[in-house]
Length: 377
Image (tube, rainbow, N blue to C red; front, side, top):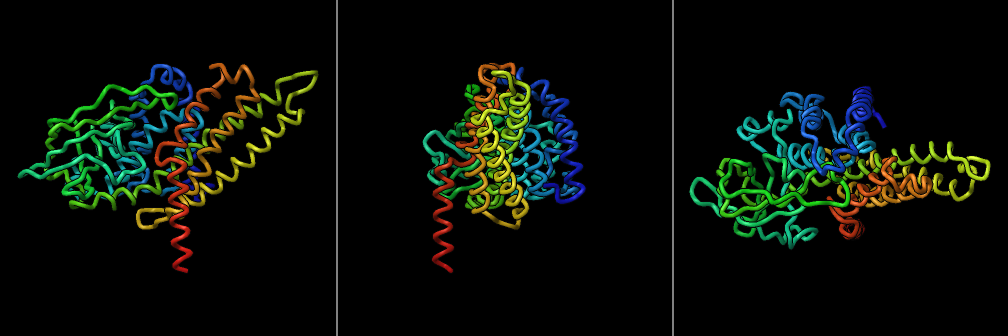
């Protein structure tokens, strides 16, 4: 799963950082339901916020496999914090870089790669989730600016973000814009409280006659769908990697506990039902790991694999939840209490069946694409 020495070095660095700096703060920021902003800046110092951006532009110059490694290792210890990272590094930085012109990169890239500014992406609306092309947010050009009106919801990094990649319709065509805190008429709603992933914040983005300079138009009018689709593969494969990370950690906790916990005079690992939980979990985790890393090796800015990325997330997302649930069952009362991180990991795991595309949307996409390919064969 480390195809080059550089990937192996990256994994070692992220693993050490996650164990030494991310793990100790995870429970506290989950309880506070806040993003650890100083720790987020550390991601910039480590070069992780621009992991897929070319080195000549200030990034790490790595690929989708590297992004999967980072999300995998961070999610072992704090999936909520990792979700804030994904919303910034994948949904904003990666998408922004490949959609922006030189002037836009000069104005924003250094600050988001360093972590000085936190980014996010505004797509989902109160009435439009999976039906994203039905979005109601509009933009109208008036001289040297666009006027945006509408609301985006469930936006990760909303309360903490300075700049957002926002999709709105210009004359009915989906178009991409850069909207930052300096734009008159833009504000974020109150933080939204969540079941899990609490170490990342979430809110609405609200546009009330929001004035966006023409120079903040990404690409041309009507290119928003292209930007959106180009970024979906890396978004979904990194979300799959988060589920792999959750399951990986839960396997470690389950194995350690089953080995140490004694009932009726012997370790509970010797009981058949416990063996079923462990065996099934390991097999499913390894299948998801192989699928996720394989798909990551086949996607990039100029390489599309929507079938693979949909399949990886469709399989990995419920796998992470199931493994976390089994780990809680093995740990019993200890798993249900906060002494062990299993209850937090189980809460966090559920989002991955919803965010970045619901399971149902992946099933729809896969069926449509597979039927289409069969018809063309």
